Length: 88
Image (cartoon, rainbow, N blue to C red; front, top):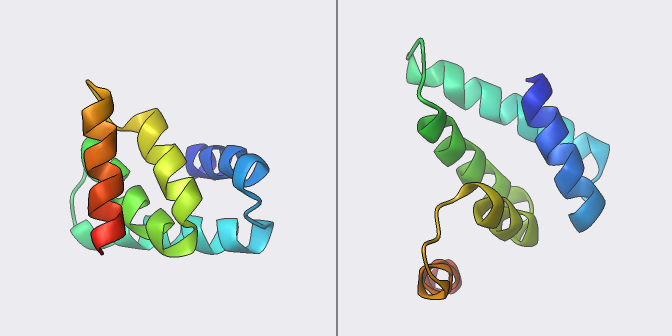
C-alpha cells in the first residue's frame, strides 16, 4: 500500500488529484487485489488493476501512469492507447 500511495501522490502533484481521492483509490486497488485470491500476485496484474481504477478517477493521470509503467515500443503504440481510450 505504501508504494501505491507514493505513486499516486506523485501523480497528484502532476494531475492535481486530492488526498481523499488518492486514499479511496489505494483502498479500491487493495480490495481488487485481495479479491483476485492470488498470493503472490504478479506485478503485471497489479498494474492492470491500478490502471482500471485510476482511469475511473482521472483520465490524464491514467495516461501518465500508463506512459510511465506501460510498455511502448513506438509512438504508434502510444497513439493506439489514446485511440482506444477515446473510443470508450
